[in-house]
Image (tube, rainbow, N blue to C red; front, side, top):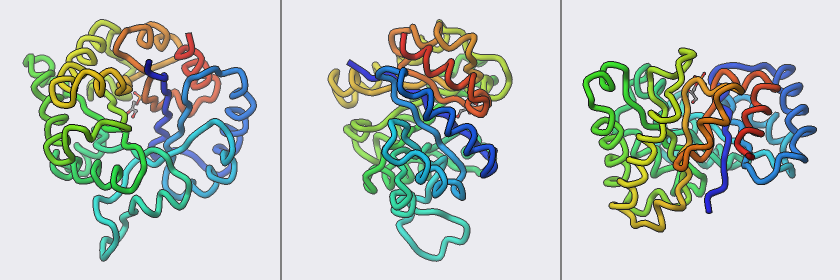
Length: 252
Ligand code: 13P
């Protein structure tokens, strides 16, 4: 009942020339891709390029962050309405790099999530624990709190038309992915929490992506888990053959 989704998070990578080559290859390969949703989340300055290359195609695009404010004196910030003007469908919210490096706390992440929803775009809400938190047996507590902050601020039905992504911080960019079993355990638990808050139907409809060192070699096994509905891909989304292999792995 859930469509699989594979989203590339380019982070702060790319150039006009590199992007064009990558996107043209994605477009050429898209025909045979089946029902999986393909998304690229690119740096703000490239949104116009991505919009012009991908408009009318079956590849959607999005941003990696947005302001929680609608407009005003917020130097360096970008609003959800601006992203909408460039055709963004998705916005990543609460990525651990934003939480850790830019000190975004649960309240700010919740405000951003709400701004994205109110602006008619689809938030991809990231949650995940650090290695120390996992080793202390606190994984569910940490991701549960990150989820609860959003549900309390945006309402229990806020995850309708949203995407959740479990990204253990210790697996991001480290080459050390969560095992399919480890990831499934957290995904299943998150879905239970959503069922409690918003009902079984809402929980059954919610796509929950896994992110953290997903590669062509481990994608199929991760995506075969019952509660893993695709991936949020960092490094491997910049290598077009790897990203395509991951998209295809989601289609099995
Ligand atoms: P990597 O795939 O490079 O580990 O990054 C994952 C990630 O942070 C996606 O948002």
